[in-house]
Image 1 (cartoon, rainbow, N blue to C red):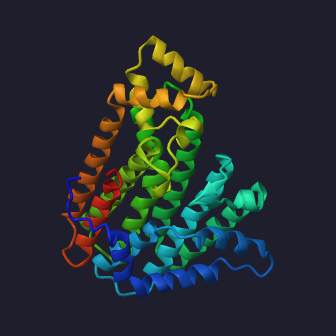
Image 2 (image 1 turned 30 degrees about the vertical axis):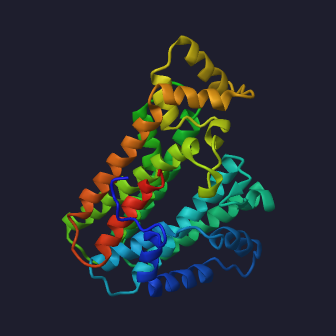
Length: 334
């Protein structure tokens, strides 16, 4: 991989988390405080299962890092980081119901342990909590950014629902979907850090551009790992294929398919008639049409855009940490 600077022993998000340890401790304390409920004990039970299940806490880290990068010394970056994590957690709860998922981060999903109703309603509760936290910052601009991101995320999920098994879905639609479901929150997370710090318009735009490109690269890599990945990186090969998700590698293979290959894709993706050996055949077709390498190239290109946006930000100890983080996102393909 091009970076050559990613230390596999200590991952970049762990270095960033260590650098922002006091801030992250404050975020975690605020999350625990605000996910409490005096009247509905199931709310903290469900929330705790997901929030404390591990994970990189990448999105709140990006908010904290962006604010500190811009010299912020106030308290509200903590509120915004908790807001971003609550929005993310709410979308995960809803996604697992929509996708009928049974595992997340190697653990049973909340909808499996409790039920779909609890997952949906607790997700709604977390969205409400996130808006309370936004308002406490006193910034209408912050409220506008995060409210727009929340709407864009929902829009992206609905678009994916209608396009995921439609072989007419093209790369432009795919980009629109992942910009909504993933990149929108990355972009908002970085943008509000600059806004709360009072950064100038050019810096705020560079932060947003960084978050957008990083989020797109992150999701493309995630989709590619479904065909390259192993259980050791938290992905089981072929899960997206079995769930009939038309992600970028498949879109590229379908675009180059001949009549016989297209009939195969219609059967396994549109009709859901999957048989033994179909995943192996799909992998052969992906290889034949160069879909995996082409997808990898796009992930690298978006990571390069993210690094370019970082070059327009203030210098300091955090910027190289974000550069290393960007390299690490695509280094997962090694």
